Length: 192
Image (tube, rainbow, N blue to C red; front, side, top):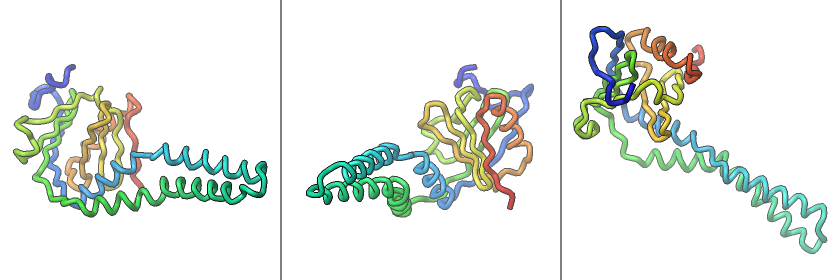
């Protein structure tokens, strides 16, 4: 089924509709989640390679260039630390500087064909009635205690759903039912 064929209302199909309230705190956590997807692999590999050459040089080069090899080791360690620690601190600081605001309510509907995501804010809607996503377009859904992140195959779209606003217990079960056969459902909830 094509995305543009997903219907908002069909009497014969099961559908579950929820109204989601997304606050600026939710947007802050959403941005942190998106930044955590960036693994900064180049810095990690670069740091490891530089550290390897530094250690190799310490054991094989002459003592006159020992200081250069120690400097290489330090640079490698700093590169690895940047990738795992400093980068996250910089991103958190950058996100805190953003002027995030609460969004108008978002209507999320799950049905046999896919997910309909509808902003009540006219600016965010960009003139569209709703944003349809077919189940085959979903690359994965990650369910945590507070949020559901639904990733699309195009890798540019991630849908945010706050679990605190879900009134119908069937919502998560229906999402699970649709995505588990495709091996695209990941439950990361922890019991409290």
